[in-house]
Image (cartoon, rainbow, N blue to C red; front, top):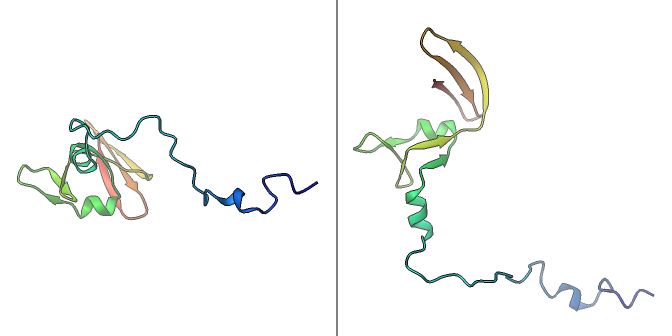
Length: 106
């Protein structure tokens, strides 16, 4: 009754060690045109950062910011808008992500 299932406690049920074999149809390419991790990271223009990381960024010579050796052009912040200020030609709001608060102007 219980001996003919895959849950009978035999070692065959645990041969994968919790990991499935790679089922990729195509092996990784050794083509030089594919990006490596470091090249792809340097080419990224959108970074997820915390407010604390933004406040600690250093400026490069071109007045762009640099993080981990890569130039930062755009950032993504996930946080709570704490309050908004309306002005004549623009409005600004403050975002708090738990690591700090930053003013954003539009």
